[in-house]
Image 1: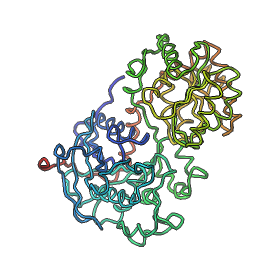
Image 2: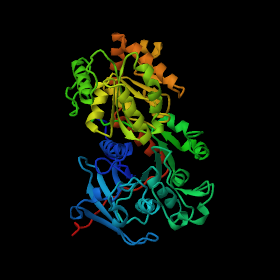
Image 3: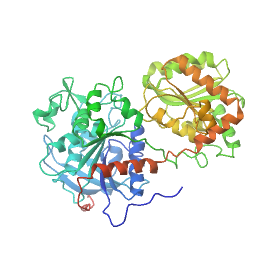
Length: 511
């Protein structure tokens, strides 16, 4: 692949503060961490001066003596001194800025939940402070010499920043608010609006008020200069019920300031020709490796080793959103065709129990691995014949892209990023050489079953199946492609707001 051309050398690089509550490999609970690692790296390859702002979690800060102190911020309401540390993101050239406030972030457990799985009771304070620091770094009162052109906020945990910046005196950076999943909104008691530094006038339907409560996400969506989400179809879906989750009116009103840009995939981590998690590499023209991975998958999960038996693969969180209850309902009839089912995932306890029960009823034909296992997730993508992803809604989704790159045509519901990335194998699409999978529209077990039967019919036609595999494996889902979309968006946001170039300065190594 030809490297992307850098920005013109004579122009000062765009400066982006990428504000995120998680980033791989430091801290991860979902796909946002992958995005937060890959997109800034791709932007830097395009010549953008991007730095990541992250809460100073225990896993992130590690040994403070290896960090550099960039600044001290002492006048955030109801907080003492906050320190800003500088480090490098592991395995990356992207600079990392950490909000060091140990009473909030230096804890056992995850970034949002404690060790028992309960939300931290002070999350409003924790991410309110995080948003305050982001806003300060994008304002004229920043303690750093490096000043971003855009503060790019991600999900509710950073969404207070655009609102805070709106009410700050003097010039601030432009703001972009990206929604990765609108279902998570950061909703708290109404008094937090003023306690976290917003004026009382902001607590209004035309502001941060959300059905009588205070919503971080609504604050970002209302006050940010521009909004984005992670696929064009999802950008349309969230402007109406049911996927607007109560914010559809606001989003529809701001549709001219709303852009959908597909996420990309990490081409180094997800390449069947060089994937270190696979027992056998493969690619177009080297199909023996895919068959070897199928055998390894059957052996690993305790499925009957049958080269002729198509495997339906699933890698997913087990939540109602993911629609796997439909696959459970369709499974008895599908298993009569016959097929095997390999599922790797965890989440809802009832769904975990139902999958284990299905495995018990069909030993050797159904394997349910409860828990996340990265090696197994790669092996399912490579060893399965058909990937199943019947999500009720899916802002972007990544596994349907992985499966295409791994020669495993997906069966997906026509929603969000699934609709944007999978070309249904209609007769005309197959003839045109465009088909890459199978799409169903009605969210029912019968519709899913019908789509899977279509896939199984195609699987039995070796010529058609090979064309589907090759079409999928040739798709460009790279982050460089996605990053160009963000670069164009940044430039459009800044068209009337040029900023002078600046540099970051950090002080001495901490003692």
